[in-house]
Picture: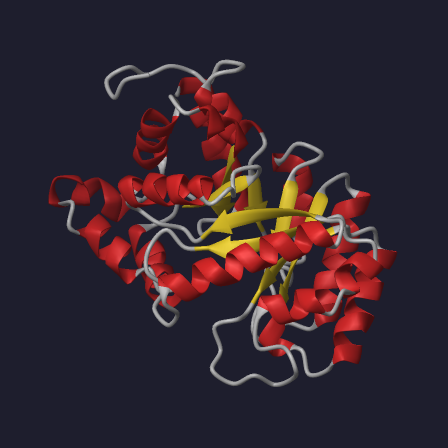
Length: 291
């Protein structure tokens, strides 16, 4: 595939593999989200449920149950620094098990104050509770660009320990990267993960189609400001981006750079649906059709 050649996503090619089993996020407190998912997404799609500040855990559990009943695979975020006690964590995992949840994305939480005994996602994992409550798969965050508060060496060491501990506890790990707008940074990060043996299931975080203003605002909040500023600096494309951002060119570049490696088979796209689930799903369908 070359930069000047447009084609549809054909069965078996790099594009189809990357987008054929994508995952996406919804906002748990949006009462319309599950109905929109039924209309826009294929059954079996993994749908992430972020744990937003001030969001009651009951909302996440209820939405996970709705998704499971509707034929989707719910992936709730479990944020370490928001749990006040071991008992609170255990109660939450028990309730998630009751509604059929068997996987979760474990996060430390970008908050300065730790309210309970869990300063990191590794601390959650070390309790052994996820295996006890029937979880089969656990996801962890990874960062193509420098984290604003944690050194790369610390992040690498923590991720290696979490992947190893997950396997020892009888579960399957996967990683999902923070969204980024620089394809070279993404592919370099993927190769570094592969060198360290993390290659079985890598979800590449992508910002879905949205207004440039929305993307820039969320990029600053999420700590990827350098990448966002690089996007803004593309002056020859700015007039188009003001109307709306889409990840077409970014995906094309990633696939061009990675499709010669055998590990490409393990890569899947994960969309942060900043512009909304329906718009993101429609864009993905159109991209897969046209390439």
